[in-house]
Image (cartoon, rainbow, N blue to C red; front, side, top):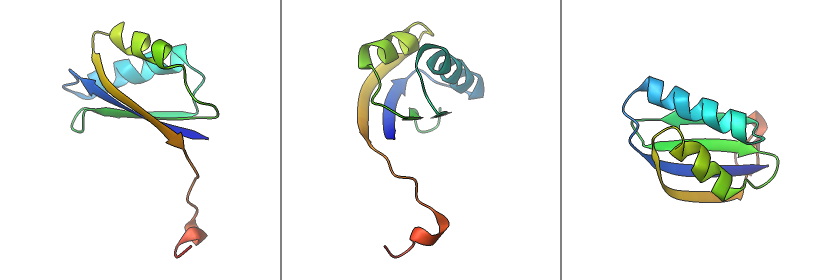
Length: 84
């Protein structure tokens, strides 16, 4: 699994978050997408690394601007992983 954090400029409300989430889901093979206009970011979980150019285009097509993209391997933290 990979976690991709996308810094986005221009989100102002929950509808903005919804537009971006929908565009990402339609364009890329993702497991989970959550956006926060307050933080100015979208967090994406996927099985494989995402195509950055396709991600940038999907966001740009909704009228927002990608400021940065960071991707890293992701391991789900379970209830019993505390202290490991």
